[in-house]
Amino acid sequence: PSLPRRPPPRPDPPNPAMLSSRLLRSLGSFAARGSAPARGFSVMTYPPTSYNGGLRSMVKSTFGEALTAPLPPNYEPDALTMEEVPTVVGKLSNGMRVATRFMPTKTATIGVWIDTGTRFEDAKVNGVAHFLEHLIFKGTNKRDQRKLEVEVENLGAHLNAYTSREQTVYYAKALKNDIPQVTELLANILLDSKLDAGAVERERDVILREMQEVDQVPEEVLFDYLHGTAYQGSPLGRTILGPESIIRSLNQDDLRAYIAEHYKPHRMVVVCTGDIKHEEVMSIAEANFGRLAADPAGKSSLDYVCETPSYFIGSEVRVRNDDQPLAHFAMSFESCGWAHPDSPAFMVLQSLIGSFDGRHSVMKNSGNRLTAALADTPDCQSASTFSTTYTDTGLFGVYAIAKPGNLDDIVHSVLDAMIRPCFKVDSGELHRAKTALKVSMLSMLDGTTAEAEEIGRQMLAYGRRIPTVEMFARIDAVDEDAIKRIANNYFYDRELAVASIGPVHSLPDYNWMRRRTFWNSY
Image (cartoon, rainbow, N blue to C red; front, side, top):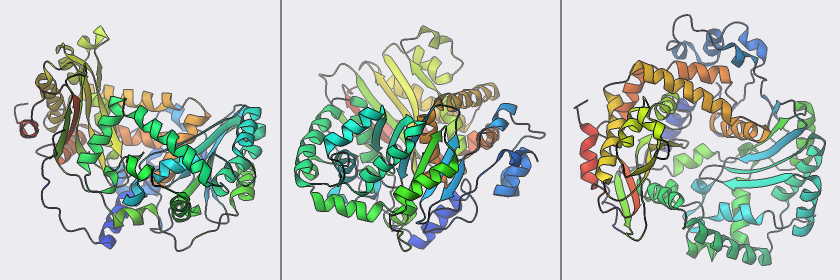
């Protein structure tokens, strides 16, 4: 593979206090006011009565006058969003937060969302968070692996876990009457896992086989390359599974040290959605997780971000393999963090640029410029806009799959679609993009597990659950000028990161792409 371009000299690391202050000001745009920098956030809940005075007064009372200005005159929210059941948030004696939302079903989903992931690992143990996710189900001081699996099967429950770069999640779905038993099981897994040497060795082989399987999935490999080149030399550039050499060397002490450092009450949220009352969940959570000792001097994820910030570097990595039938490539610009005021505009822009699927002939009649342009390019199989967001940064770009013949034409259409909003935004297309975004957001919340996922993610990212009526208001406040502003600030004449694999001989070089970021012919 060709090596990435030599990065420019790295600037001196910012003062941690200044960076922390900047991050907290950014988080203030979405998080509840009065957030504490070292111990998470003070959480606010929004009962239905909060909406009686009108959306504008609710937003003003929470965020101040400045954020109410973008709302159109006489703005009226959709009546259906006003009927949303509120998310109720409480706190256990040790500082662990509990968020619940009632849903009239006979089942419930309960889980623990932890504010830690690959980004917060030491480079010497890269992959330990994912390793722990596997190993933690292999037996506790109360249940061996077989007893644990049999108990889950007897309950008919679904137990799962996953690790990302900034979050680790363990959750289960079961009948509502089994939630107390399922919660005890989750607590036993998280707090009392054996982590014995034999299980470590067995799971090491499982993870190495998983790495081989992942290496056969072009999309997974490509986005690891993209993060590696965009954030080279910083925590976000590491892979979630970790390098093979480290996986072969991890031991019990590494796993226990990671748990001791990061599995702290103030960085954990218990989330329960379904047919169960908040008070009951609080009681169950206190009985099972209340024994986890509080750490008043413990670091927050913001502290770790300030200590080792990730820098975006304009660069390219391409792995040419002419034996593969299709070329896969992704190009991205740096975007903003979760709680940045520009975040809703990026959500709308992602919907505005859209996606393309060559299997559907109807794409040729789409009003979306990217889709219509790629429909006339016979070699393009698919293209999708992605927005990957982290605490203080993000990647916004397009991932495409194509035959190797005319990659330069495809790249030209993609960059045209991304740079055009710097100068022109069609009001009709913008309205359609907002509507499509709202439909997509609502359609994803189709059950207790999906609802729990959304609540857990928002509690860690924003410190609260954002009501649908407020999120829709933020989306509606994005106008043509807002799209032009973020496109100019983040895309126009900015560095981009590019990763490609497969038969990419016709893919233009980095400088060719870079020059297309400041074209004015729109």
